[in-house]
Length: 129
Image (cartoon, rainbow, N blue to C red; front, side, top):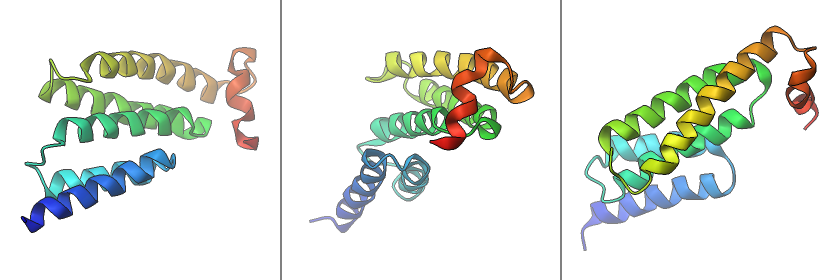
């Protein structure tokens, strides 16, 4: 048995575990390491999808001050995926995520500049979650 394949599967399982535990930042780091160490992995498309989705979910669950920056990263990850897999299995979902991230980035930027805006109600109370 090829030892590299086992390490690749282990690295993938680690990233997926972090994702399932909602440890999105750790999932991104783990999957980025997998891409670096195993660029020919058979799971590359799914790994890039999970990176984008992890970034998106991290952005959604971030404090107001970090949302804009994190949505920018999500948009970059979505564009990276779409550049590599324009007709991929996850393309439709990635396009939707990118669209939502772009809209949320605008909203988060407005809320960080005007935290007392009544339209930012959901953002103000994330500090207590």
